[in-house]
Image (tube, rainbow, N blue to C red; front, top):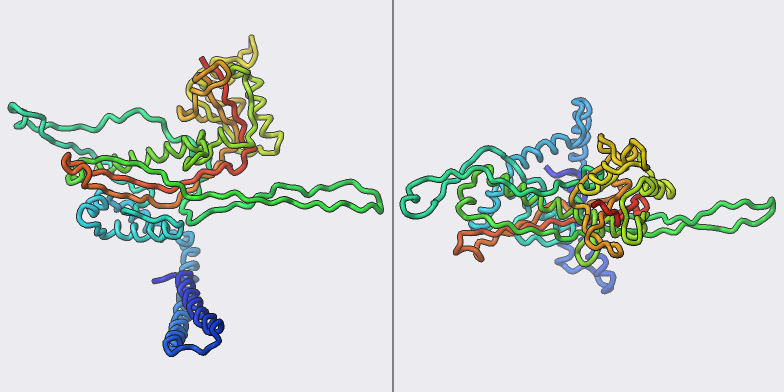
Length: 434
């Protein structure tokens, strides 16, 4: 059953079509052609039918609202539950195998592909392969893979392959720090900005006050392609073991999350890379020294003062540093002879929470200190916006690696990052931590 919104959009499309006939006839100073008359009258009948359908849909939605209130649910909660169930039933490998079998999708995978394609079209992005939902990760049960181990009798012995010992990688940090995620975006996103300008002045009793006015600007977000390619053996794909599926989806998701965090922290803003906090113009900069310097209590206080001095303070601010800076702060006292350290045993700096990640650079240059300086950020991370256009585009290549039995999966996600207010952040780029 279509919603009243969908029906109204359909009605608006028909009215636009009718108006097109009228506009064309007027511009050519003529009456409708027989074909135009037939279509115009047909649209009138369709509009009558749609008006009745819209009325019924609005009544049904009002009933749903009343029932939801009676049951203590929010509107759309049942739909969200259904979507969560669909996501749980979603199989990444079924979607992959469909590409090997002529690209025909069925069931849950087909529903998601259709929905995500609509979102992609609205965002002005063309899907080349299969559109899959964010978070298409599922089961995590035990599994083994048996394969040929070699010649001279070993072919007769089955080999049990245990779980993969994964590489050590940093964990995503920006969401933990409170960055604002805008999910399910469509099209270009713009934010009007008030740059100020209205001023009040003290004037005499009969003096004329000079007019002032605010200046307004805008900042925007556009989808930028974030891509990853994964190779999966044809044998493993055909076996479709649950743990392999969860691992494939998890690795893809982690790779994109880390790329987003790297860009949000230190993105150059050049080419297709979003601009990160450390390179955003307008942040408050704290300088250690000409050739860098060890962090001091004065640096810490200076970072906080810079934020408060421009009225950018917020309730949930924090520090983001790397592990070597953490070690330095936990062994550096406020002042000589002081019992307190810059970072407490509770992992706080001057009462503020601290996030620690190797994604924060530790190889920056300052003067003669080359490749050894660390960065740090303090501020309101809610003013870092991470926009997600809510779908993956998954393309399966079973041709290039066919001789090796390898299938290449390329996933594209569409992301943008925006430092909403640069003044909400103080940064340092030349702390020496050795």
